[in-house]
Amino acid sequence: MTRQRLVHATGLSRAVVTQRVAQLLDYGLLAEGELGPSTGGRAPRLLRLRADAGHLLVADLGATSIDVAVADLSGAVVGHLEETADIADGPDVILDRVEAMFVDCRRGVEAPGQLWGIGIGVPGPVEFESGRPVAPPIMPGWDRHPVRDRFASYGVPVWVDNDVNVMALGEARAGVAAGQDNVVFVKVGTGIGAGIIVHGKLLRGADGCAGDVGHMQVNETREVVCRCGNVNCLEALAGGAAIGRDGEAAARAGRSPFLAHVLEQKGALDVRDIGRAASHGDAVSVELLTNSGRLIGQMLAGVVNLLNPSMIVLGGGVVRTGDLILATVREGVYRRSLPLATRDLAVKRSTLDGIGGAVGAAAMVLDELFAPHRLGEWLEHGAPVGRAAEG
Image (tube, one colour):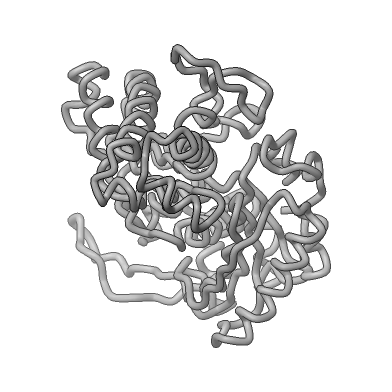
């Protein structure tokens, strides 16, 4: 990036940018690269952040998993660990494991420099300013829990956000949506949520819960009560837990010998079992996945008409069951959206698989650390080390 681009990107004056760049160079945080293309005068000298000047610790908490990573200051993941977990075990149990995994992950890699910041994604609505989950439907015991305070002893800034928001950032920075300014990322896992990128910026909304599409109501002849207490929310009919539930019901009713056999062996079914059964031609499983894709496609057609994104990216465990969900969602979006809104629209599967949340959490921390209003708070110290962990 050149100094001129920094002026445009930050909105700061050329004099202030020049001063900040000089400071960053003095502290060894920036390095001068090769000459850039000339626009008529002297060719500008390109600047790059020294990725090895420090590192970040990030964690992506799902309904049934924990992913932690060490990232450098370019946002690249240099170490990664994951394990199964139940978010319903509560904040003390889960955050104890996160801290233990942080220790293990740092031991296993050459973490560059000092720790600069921590980023956490959680599977529920988050008040971004306070870093606290608010009435999360699948996170009993987490309401208003001070997640940020738990990591205060690290002595660095900490940010907490919804897991789908950080996944959306990951896709926009390093995934299939890199270079796209208007993107909707949809995670279809145990629940369903969306992260929305508008003009290159994450849209959090007034209180931090923009994109909670899993609790939009859909029209179905049957009524299913959602975990949030409402009836016929999208995730109650089309999410991974719903697909597993309906698969078990079909197996017990004798509609699918294939699923009945799996149920007898395992004692329970999940969406991965439904996906495997569908790949073997089980008609009931194909029907369940097709219905999920149909409902998600209907929802996304409304989102497309509202936001006109250039790309929709689908991720999560349900999407990883195979191509059936992706194809059905595409059909629904293209059929029900306005022609102009879909003229250049691409609907793609995530390419980051299990590390999308970690990549996005690192991007979140870097965005906040280098935001113009925050850079001056720590720059004179050379690094954000020792700063309050308030973010």
